[in-house]
Image (cartoon, rainbow, N blue to C red):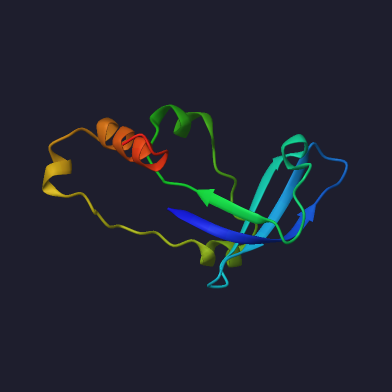
Length: 110
């Protein structure tokens, strides 16, 4: 997935991290935290291009434990999607190769 966002807020403080909040053309909002050194030139009105995908990475799931939601309202925002968009041709290759192909396509190497 890729999204283009207009930076609305850049929250700087005493932390080594900067919070950047943006909104896309459909009104969807995003917030990321990045090292302050990487966000030195980011200002409201800048364009924020995000590219992402989701994959199961066993070594990460044991290293990172998600924080519990602060309240029930936070839990209501979570949506679990159970969809399999794998085609028959993709099913014949392993998940590692499929992730590698998707990654290479995203960065323009495919």
